[in-house]
Image (cartoon, rainbow, N blue to C red):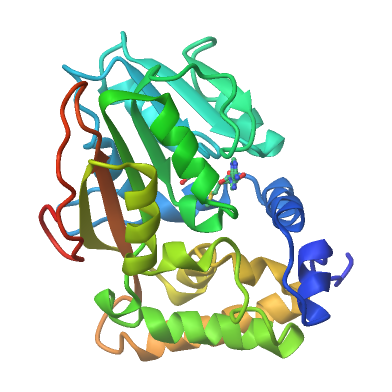
Length: 315
Ligand SMILES: C[S@@+](CC[C@H](N)C(=O)[O-])C[C@H]1O[C@@H](n2cnc3c(N)ncnc32)[C@H](O)[C@@H]1O
């Protein structure tokens, strides 16, 4: 077995101290998803919020079964959200999934009844296969933060959504919302930075999406007149530290660039941290999440955009 770390144009450019371009980012993401297809689902499905929901279920609540007829899952990955929509929403709801990873799309094909969802291998920046105003609700689970450039993605969603349509996305939430999250983040990035010092200073995707203000500016530009809501939540999972550590590490793309040996060292340190931070009970990991919901004005309606604010409620 080789002990080679994952190295791509993206990591090589980073190692030279330069900023990787969008083509290098896409190739890097495709390489991670080729080697670890389905990894997001395997960790995210284990996590629950205080109401017992997965982040997929929380996002799917943005669908209005009586009003929405066509649903687009942007960056659908291995298809857990499409499967949830298939199982819990009306059979008449047309499901469309798009992702740029052929390895992830292959997993979707294996889990849904033949023909239930239309699956397209494409970049979210170019949804040419969809007509203007042809989608009622677009969902995006844990992928917007990876996209660069991200403005064309939002512009494309604004184009394909019908008047009165809805865009909802699940993205990383503020670190401070989840106890212990910052320590896990710093531990993993510490290991990665021992090999690639600039990883973290430069990260995947457009950095503006990682801050509420930056995301607000992008959303306002792409969806004029829309009502925007951001809610913060926390999902947690628990279990023996040795199994919890790789599951928690699965939330961090940075962990995938470590060599197998370096990864084992990181996982041992992470298991020790998770044990140390839960001395009285079963080790647990908490992940901060934000749900963004954008409601487009109905035809002929022009809503004033209200001020953006993080936290519960409309803003
Ligand atoms: C963290 S995974 C999330 C997958 C799935 N939504 C889930 O939550 O299980 C990110 C997904 O985004 C896809 N992706 C990233 N950038 C993309 C882009 N620009 N266009 C299309 N897909 C993209 C990747 O191929 C990957 O499947």
